[in-house]
Image (cartoon, rainbow, N blue to C red; front, side, top):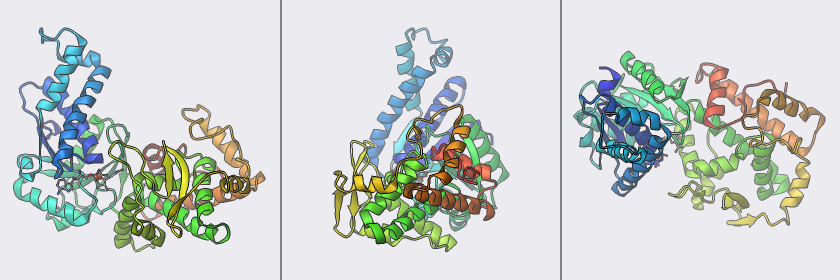
Length: 443
Ligand SMILES: NC(=O)c1ccc[n+]([C@@H]2O[C@H](COP(=O)([O-])OP(=O)(O)OC[C@H]3O[C@@H](n4cnc5c(N)ncnc54)[C@H](O)[C@@H]3O)[C@@H](O)[C@H]2O)c1
């Protein structure tokens, strides 16, 4: 069955979640454009989520985004509505397109909505038993040739497929957040996977204008395979530095150097907060279950026992986690012993800054280097200056840089990634790093 036929009846499970809503948007737009181009065909997008309140919000989101998309693609919209004499102004066509998008969408809590789908996207919680239960239910009600594209970010695909009796019919389709914007798509093909499904996944990625990085079916894949080890290094550094400098300063040092000295968009604890301390723990647990590689942190467990979770509010504001935020700025650090945030009020953090020493080049930052045509040369010069600049900050950044590089090389050696270039692509596209971790900048 070709992609266009499969797209005539698609289902997204977990549609109202963070990832599900972005995937739903991508599909809703694609389906609306196809419906206008193939008027002889019917198209249906079933959006299933157990949270029906959130499904209402999803419909509003789809309409808003459909309007924005149509505004950006006005010449295509005018062409598609060329035969509609009743639509004259751009605004009228934009509203007609938003109506078109919603016309193909059906929402509900029940899985039976998926019964005629031959293509199902799954973006429910990252829980093995939950996903297996969903696949079993789908297998029982859907056509025999139904395929599942799952957004799991850590659970091995062969485990999900085997446990649900869906061997050959499940592939990892790991969108990054937010799916509608992020170019990266990590595609995880288990050993047993229908060739039709593999071709379909590749074709759809092109249609959705995604850059595919293939990953092997090893827990955590490339993205979390790197992020979890990077995060654990940050945590171990904190535990080491805390003995001499105290916990709060240690977090300050590691977060600051991992962002400003390594020229990353976020410090490592900011990133863990962004993803959610609870999600970080969940992914570690999944990976440890399958890899048995010391992927565990008592500190993360302690934070969660104390109710410190991070993550985002429904409006996208950052919640407090390792760090305390005020309008996006870091203003404090949580001390699990005192069980309170220690504010960065200048009493101790100025001293911590002095201890780190001057930034090797204060004119350079992740932001200032965006789109720089001489990026590689500038990075080479910047990291090349580390050796002549042995401050405490440079030392921490150098250690971080080397550990992250080793973790990345291991992903290649262990067969998770096919090449160093693939690891670098995941970090630059998926995590917005300026440079891939496998490089020779510090050699
Ligand atoms: N959040 C990210 O940055 C990110 C990135 C890449 C991949 N992922 C993966 O995507 C998946 C979803 O993550 P998320 O962050 O969007 O989670 P989320 O909690 O925002 O959304 C999950 C959604 O699934 C729904 N759900 C739960 N059980 C269901 C069921 N039985 N039937 C239907 N709907 C159900 C929930 O109501 C919720 O709306 C996970 O597998 C996660 O690992 C997440």
